[in-house]
Image (tube, rainbow, N blue to C red; front, top):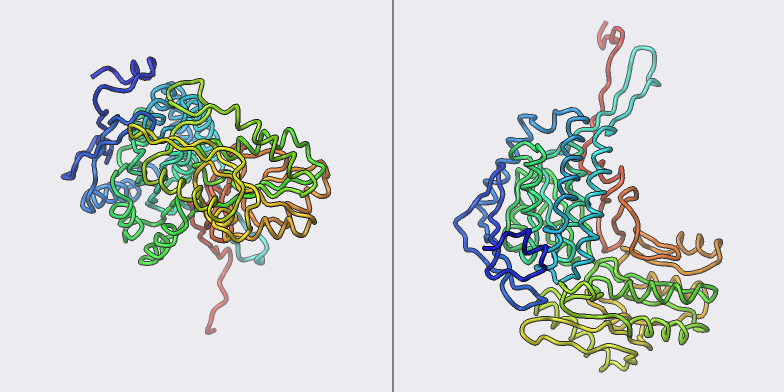
Length: 501
């Protein structure tokens, strides 16, 4: 087989699938399950192959993580020692951007330029998390009287299971794994079966960076088998899941067996709220990006345009004009802006929403066309006007490049429309009025809000949702604290008063 780095440099599809075994206890691991090939959704040919693990394979991985945590090979290192490994990992990620981006594009169908950007940004997250490894701390209380001193000790939670989705397999893992490691935890990762190669490549890079064996383990396979078993596992202390809200509910229920900590980042139906005084040209460009980015397969995609009626027609026309310039096609062609839909099932789901929108009387402004020739799945960015706020287009997470437009007349109506869905993951607010912006961001129910921008930011701020969009926070100092537990300590400094004299 041609060397992977050569294929990445040439941007050629491999002649045969790249095999990636599981990674347990510091080495490649081949279980008793079958090899499952993955077809590139942008090319329709097999490109990778991964193992389909059993529950027994998962038990091996969890046992390795448990040993690595209990013997202190990672959890009892100094913050400086952990930071050194994380910084080396960040550099190795930078050194392997082309290979990682190539694998990401092959499996997910996203444009190669986007993949390069995500991998590079992920390296920055690892660098940020390395700094946090040196500042994780508790607290002290010298207010308990002359003979008592109080401490709050922050300790790693233990063995963490991380289940990641197929839309941003490398980036989303990098929003979680380095923070768990900075806290001193050991980890078992279950990537999405469709996109596991970059996670397995990262595990090997972590070993090269000096991470002790057993600290990070990767088990591949079906979410309904391995992911569910990881959530249920009695020797896992915390589960972090990113995916759909229905699956998140099942993870939450499964985690109750041993009352493990749970972090969930789930679905979103995110509003782009455009007030009449906004910079309409800037807003239109960002709205088009927000729905077309990653072919709309993004939990924070701005899939609802809530716009003041006085500028609705103008904004919609400007969005249409931007989308008319968007090139959809081969994800390995750097000139394309939008790549493929990840698989046939997701392609059919998106087409179903487009068909339903037409049947329900919404006005198709642009897009709506789809192609699955040769098992390559592409959908043009699609915009609907006259969308009823209670319709499926406006209420349900489509996870595709489909934008619904609903006008408002008053501020209160805008907030009501923005909050009138079960989700609360993200929102964008477009206005030149600072007072109006702050009033909006206070009232909008979302874990992440952008003002005059969208889908941007760094690892310094936390991410997460409210309502049915999740529990807990990732990234920032809050992210590392998610992977810790607090212990209260009272220290008697003088003689303890006797109960019975």
